[in-house]
Image 1 (spheres, helix red, strand yellow):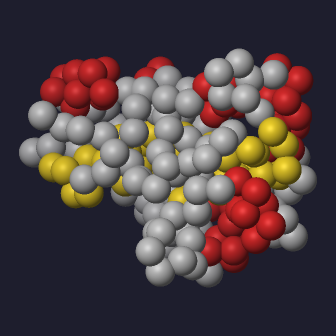
Image 2 (cartoon, rainbow, N blue to C red):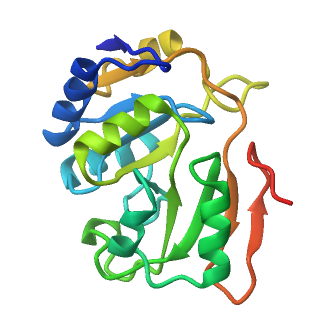
Length: 203
C-alpha cells in the first residue's frame, strides 16, 4: 500500500494508520530528514527478521539505527553519556545525524545478546515525529539503497513502492527524499569522532 502523507501538516488519521501497522508486526518504508528508510517497531522480532531478509542480513549483524522521538528515550537504550556528548546532541538534534552510543542491557535481545553499541537518530521530519510520538517507543531502521549506478539511495516514493510493494506492508509517500545520508558520529570512546560525513554539518 502507498500512503500519501503531507510533511507540513500530517493527518492524525494517517499517523494512527501507520502506527497500527507498526504495532502489528508490520514493516514500513518512510521518509526521514535525509533518505528513505525501511523500519519496524523495535519490539517486533518478526518484523525485524523480515527486514533483515529483505536486506540479505541477520538482525545481529546489521547496523540498524534506533529512531527516537526525543532525547528522553536515550536512557532506556544507552549507557550514561558525557556532558560533552549530551551538549552536542542537544545542539544538533533533531537533525540529520546518527550518534553511535554505548548500548544498555535494555536493547531488545534480537539485536544480539552482546550488543555493545547502538545508533541513535532523532530525525527532523514531521511525519516521522508524529509516528514516533504516537507509537511511544523507537523504530529501528535501515536505509533504502538504489540499484542505479549513479544514485546510491532511492528518492522517488512511487518507484520505491513499485519495487517493495510485495515485501513490505506500507510505503509512505512523503515527497521526494534526499540522496545524502546522515552524518555519523561515534561517541563510544574518549574522543568524539565523525566516521561518515553526510547531510549534517559539524563545526
